[in-house]
Length: 509
Length: 108
Image 1: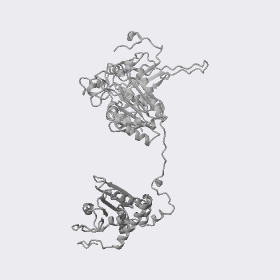
Image 2: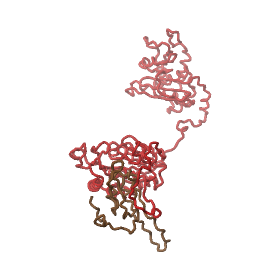
Image 3: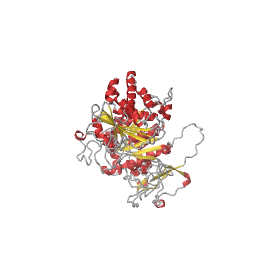
Image 4: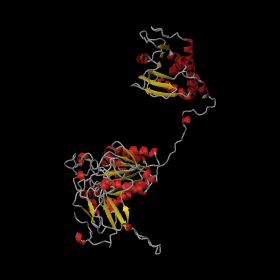
């Protein structure tokens, strides 16, 4: 993970203090030095690679050092992922020699959630500023905390938008001047500063919430302990930890670094009291969900009658078939598509089903795209169908022009509209609704169509269709109607071969 | 810059040595130091000072005065730059094997 820069500042040029007194080196040992968790050189720019980009006296550098020290001491360097925010600390990934992700503004807790859930053995740190966490990312942090995600969030609060030049932040103090509150923040107009630590402490799930400050030596050492504790909590897998760090921003506040630090002590701490708001292992009841295999979910597990055995026997004589099924909502258009892909799956094909609802679920127009293929399907969208099942005249007129030359249209009616012409394609009118009605339920019209489709195209085995219907249709009487409807559809094609076909000017069919 | 409460001595010339021979010393990477002065303000025995010369990047880097460092490390934690300050401390004398049973109190 070592970053070696090609354009590096000659390290020998970086002088150390010449006034270092002559000491007997053997008597001394290094107790504090640059942490190995930082890169040797920061390769963001071609020069100044040994310095961070932070202003002199910025709190971010101190927080970085405290985090790096904690990571080093807990031995977590190889398993830490830091999610950097948008804000001054956006370039944290140039400094920390750990796993790094940089995410959209405010979304660090959401990204950290995904990382932690995908890699539960990693230590995931969300590093955020107050504009990032308390303004644009308010929803993300609240919900991540509420879910008790096992991540550590370090919230650097400097009461201002630093990177963009000093606009008012949600945490800006009452009366504090900023470029967007030039007369000082007025609670009546801009609201009160948001206390994120207290807000999150109202939730049930977080394990550890503390507010610390970089205002003086004592508080910096407290911040060091808090950051270390947050990482320990995550290392132990206890839960969500949140450390708010009140931090100076000398440049934007217009103060020198020492004054800025004093301002944290004198102005910020009274407004944002330092406290441990939460420190306990949360009791989150675990509710086990039954784990089922894919085969079980798809009901493909071995069936007693060897229904799946027929699957392999059916020879698919096509490479792929694209089917569009269209009609009114309520005609079973989408269901027909689902039945077809279920059958395709059972016969070992690649399948896709893409519904397209009309403006109304009932009595509107609906259609779905079905792909059956021996190969992986690139797109589930069917723009040029091989087969169109048109359950009404509207669908016939709308989609028939899309059917490929030599394709098939099954139309739910006794006859074609007199003015309908479709050169180059075979159109078979089937009075499916009437047939289904006579069998006992108009709803079975889609099954009649399915029978006709299977018989005409022979793309799938009718026995598979029966087994799917047996599994999907729970009502016994309805199943009987469906069974008869399927048979009726097949029989219709058998008996009316070529009768209903339209002879076209080009001599097709 | 007001001296912090409890500072040792009135003026730099009369700073008392806190522990006989200095217990530690500080090495500052003058090119990394941005001259913010937080360490100067924080150092309990006031043994750091801002230099008068400029470094390559236009900052007055911090120097160790050469006296009184206790090796406490406060300057390291106050400094926002990861590698600007390195703190050395006198190696601990080998502890006598627990004869008295008392606990060794670390310097910090």
